Length: 180
Image 1 (tube, rainbow, N blue to C red):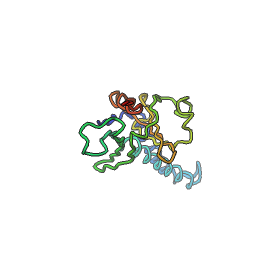
Image 2: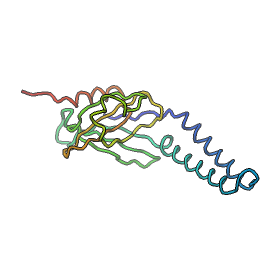
Image 3: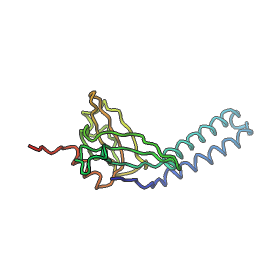
């Protein structure tokens, strides 16, 4: 199972454009030192361009793919908790596996939405978790969080934007079937 969320960051595109042209204007005003000293204009222009580069790379040029794959190719019909959850980052033609966690260690899956995940009651027990943000859109409403517990007792939380079939599968994977 695989899902790649669509990038709908119109606000981030506008922000990148404003930062780019704001940096250009600041650098063009640097010889006009009658307003401010030249160094302040140059510093402001460079900060605007660095912020523009960050917004471009993080929200516009990067896409994430979420995959649920079997751990081994020997098992033709694996159970949900015998699979792995992986996040792949793509920038241009380059694809890189950012995260791969076993669904066997999945503790909980909960809906975050557009709220701050740190204020949700479901997250209070996992405040010490290392949080990984793999969302594509800055203002997406359909965000979920997965919380994994490593064999060492450390918690890892993944913030992502799945589709509904992936959410249903992950909800099933967090509650193993009792075979007895």
